[in-house]
Length: 138
Image (tube, rainbow, N blue to C red):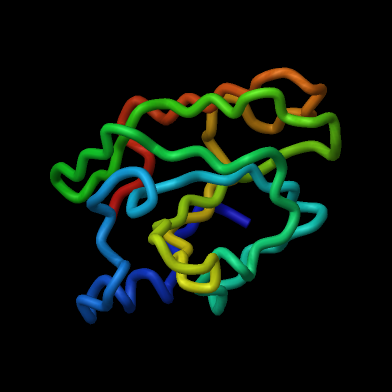
C-alpha cells in the first residue's frame, strides 16, 4: 500500500462534519500511531481509530501543526520506550477528540518515505522524522 488519505476523513472534511478539522491540541488534536502491517491492512472504508489493529506503543500527539498551501506539517514525534515486538512499517494519523476512540477520525496512512521506518521495537525510543516538505498534502 502507498501513502493514502482516508476517504472517509476527506468526506467529513468536505461536509464540515464535527471532529474533522485538524485544529486543536491535546485531546482535540492530530495524533499519530505506530502500526505493524502484519496486524493491520489499510482499508479505504475505515473511518475511526477503533478500526485499527497492530498498534505499537502509545500514540503521540503531533504538536505545532501547521496547514499552509494544502500541506499539513508538525513537529517530529518520538515514541518513548516502545515495548519489543513486531516490526513497525506504517503510521496512521488520526484526529483525536474527548470522546471514545470510536469517534477519533482516521486521517492519513503513511508507509513509504518516512524516516525511521521500518523499525523493530526493542524497548527503546522510536523517533519519527517527517519529510522536509510536510507530513501530507491535499
